[in-house]
Length: 418
Image 1 (tube, rainbow, N blue to C red):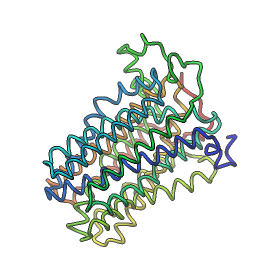
Image 2 (cartoon, helix red, strand yellow):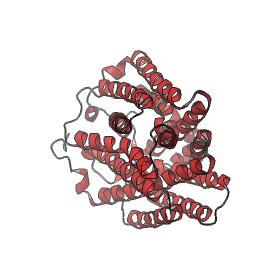
Image 3 (cartoon, rainbow, N blue to C red):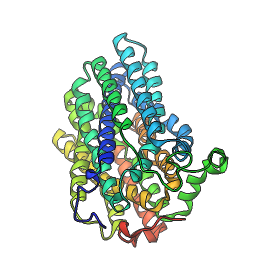
Image 4 (tube, helix red, strand yellow):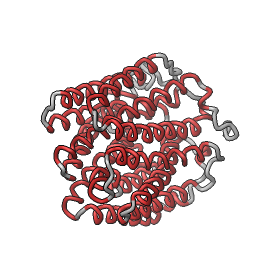
């Protein structure tokens, strides 16, 4: 790779630096928003099931809107779609602030969490498919690694800040509004390069093609016939769905570990701290020689760490297990994200990113719902341990079903599929 010996190659590009900074600030704001909202839900209801419904409220808009949003990212300006997504998230924060300040009913929290889900559906395909348009082709792997690292910075700082501000939710939500407005300003100064497919916008494709049902489903067909991408997405999908221990942290914090909202915020940040440390290590090392085996191994270790967290009754051990959960998850996120960028032609990136958001990013919310309902049925500890064990089963099944994944060559040697 041209940038193999320069871990900061992508950061030297002004537009990528602006995109990364805006993404970090936006993700931090969203993490603060959700952390405070889930604490508020549990404080008012004392119900694990209600925590699950909070995840479901964010998942449903993603499920319904992700594919049309991906199609839009391949037709309209990805830059302006991202700005619209930030404005929508700011609107959700404004609604949550009003609920908090005027002591509105709990169901309104779910309404505005659903609006936040709309923002995620709009923003994910646009954000992901913008990356290749602001860096050179040889920097793509480096840019993906830094993008993941930036998200982990947000996932570290957001929950920690959210935990500190959980006692003053109105102030927290007003802060997220300010952060998201700054993000809109930063994105306005990004100028993505044009591509051969850029008609009528960066994403490419004609209006007739873009509006067709065939074009809408093209991302699903592409993922289905690209076995390496399908394998990586499927592996992460079930791991995230089954191993959703983080969604139950408010209940673990209160019922098992006996910590206050500050301790909850620190625990909530632990996976992201681990992921950030791992992301830094990956950014400064050469590309993985056996990425397929690394993907399978990291998801298996993610499952073992999830089981360890479920069995822990010590706050320090729980923090360590959550740290490892984030570290191992980061490896799979970087490999999957790089696979997606390397194998997908630019004219398809928005729709393929949308499929990824449906089957991976939205699964965080659906996994939260599953964890909440399972915990209500089985109890906190059995729910988490069973999820970790299920993840291990998925790893074995994926290794057997997709043998090419085990033999995967270095990612920078891959070519886009036609």
